[in-house]
Length: 279
Length: 288
Ligand SMILES: Nc1ncnc2c1ncn2[C@@H]1O[C@H](COP(=O)(O)OP(=O)(O)OP(=O)(O)O)[C@@H](O)[C@H]1O
Ligand SMILES: [Mg+2]
Figure 1 (cartoon, rainbow over the protein chains, first blue to last red):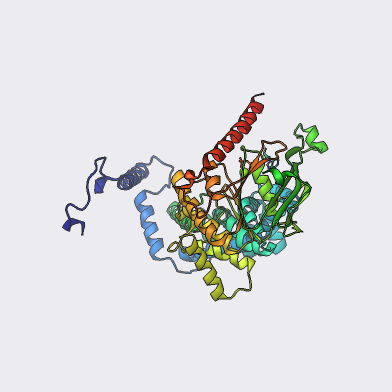
Figure 2 (figure 1 turned 30 degrees about the vertical axis):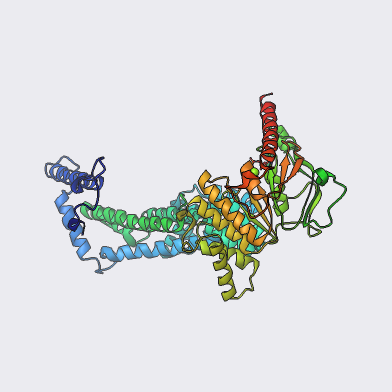
């Protein structure tokens, strides 16, 4: 349409970006170029034995990646399971543990944020438990639950609860006091203020917390599964026992990709609840 | 003119009566603060202020920065307590905030996650939970039209300019039909031109509704354009009411012609000299 009106837009000087050379295109070219260079160096290095023995060349790894992604769902017993199944197993554990964690963390965070007394009372627990490595809970989980599946979920729960809890409490405690004044001058009840003002006002903080928690859950599941028997973590552990490095690299790539997708979902959610606020 | 300062005679017709009100912000003087060197003395923000406000008058409060105007207005709103004295609304002491007083905030205080319509609806729903859907809708629509926001109903505050946001703030405060409208520097964050537009809107709306209004401002012209009475406060600490000016200009008023009134320049000069004197005293106190 613009072509049919040649005098439609005036040119007011300044640098006019050429279609084929704007910033995004340049970044993309750099990305592709560096990727090719990396793969080439990798291929050469592996073929000429620069790396450790058994390090596969890029081509083998890419072939494996292609094979695993085109055959995601087969099942020949726990030690020979399609990567799709393993992925679903890991995602399921994360989903259950993370959901339970969020269901505890958000309401508890709201309570702690609203009440300075609860804040002071619960803070020592949070500060003490937050820095504990998730894997430190593993033996305890196995001992109490006597079930590797439940232990995996328990580990996810206990490690992904803290960021959501802390962020929710922070967001609720730091709601713009003017919003609360509005609510007070209207004579809104405490409950109405909490649900209509405090929670929506704290939502950006809450979602930011949920996003960090999700990242942690995804980090932890791989580590926990190495000791638990199925899932992507176990897949890596199993390939390590087989000493077959290409499949480990394939798994690393898939773990990264899924983590990226999960994070983008939360990034989009953050944007959705921001309404012009930058948090 | 200084009748209102005689604290022993209260006007029987007053809608709002501020009686010998003092506000002290208590410093930190517990043992822990003293040991950690963080103790602070009590601060007397305003002392023994009395003021009667008749129904259907537009009152502005003007005074040097930091003298305690917001403190006084917040006590009228019920957002903070008086230390000494009481404030009566229709002869009943104010003990807390309530929807008989509508508040317009300097920084709009709109909920960012609600649209224009939802912001107003939140107020109306809170105050009149039993209103039928139809009446609710009508009230909201009326007030959106009143402030000239028709067409922006579904926008969120961050999509609006400052002037438009404050229109929402005013619509929200009026939609609950309060007896008194409280405004704390409602146009303080706006540029001069937008400010002028909004003042004209307030003039128009006020002449339509004749609600009692208490407004804080720093602008002499704004006070002269809008008010029936201007309360001039002294500098803090322990700020008092220095003088109350009656503004005799006939209504309806127009910004273009208002300065042709014979009393305009005298009133303006008096306010200027008051503000100049108080502000200079504040600055000298800071240098000393
Ligand atoms: N919560 C508080 N605790 C202690 N001191 C306070 C508190 N709130 C206000 N003050 C002090 O009381 C005085 C009056 O404050 P206030 O905000 O009422 O002034 P103001 O006249 O509204 O000023 P401005 O014109 O800048 O809005 C100031 O010196 C301020 O520092
Ligand atoms: Mg103020």
